[in-house]
Length: 79
Image (cartoon, rainbow, N blue to C red):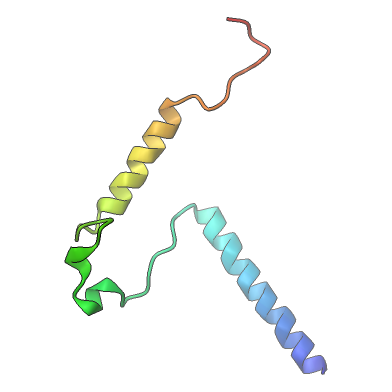
């Protein structure tokens, strides 16, 4: 029984470590080396339309939009 508990704790630590790594890097998760490319469906992708850089371009656009929009304000300052 101790072995199962130890294995469970180790797996929890591994999953937590991966989650922290993803959060710290602030990058979106990427797919495996298979996916639409292996199925020949990459050109039919409704999101990127076959352009590998489309997601990165969209993320940059969203980041610029978020920075441009002031989503918070200082309530202590009067206009």
